[in-house]
Image 1 (cartoon, one colour):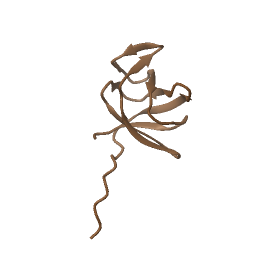
Image 2 (cartoon, one colour):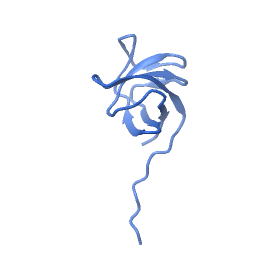
Image 3 (cartoon, helix red, strand yellow):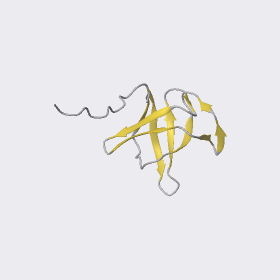
Amino acid sequence: MAAASPQRPRPGALIGEITHYFPKIMVCVLKLNAPISVGDNLLIQGPKTSFTQKVLSLQIESVNVKSAGKGRMVGLKVDNKCREGDRAYRVKI
């Protein structure tokens, strides 16, 4: 009998789409389709991208915020490379 493989989080609610990525500082700009808060767990997914991470900080126009609502553009520090067009989903870990 094969050992059970660790479960990957399934995409939850779509939070937004990445519009820009700045590789030197590992920050992406996320256009929100739904509210987001510091502490949320996200799955960033695209054709060449798939990773999960906790939101540790958010910025709107270089100002730290604890949450942001639908329609806003936020800066998000990411742990891995992502690409324009990748999508962010809220997941439970």
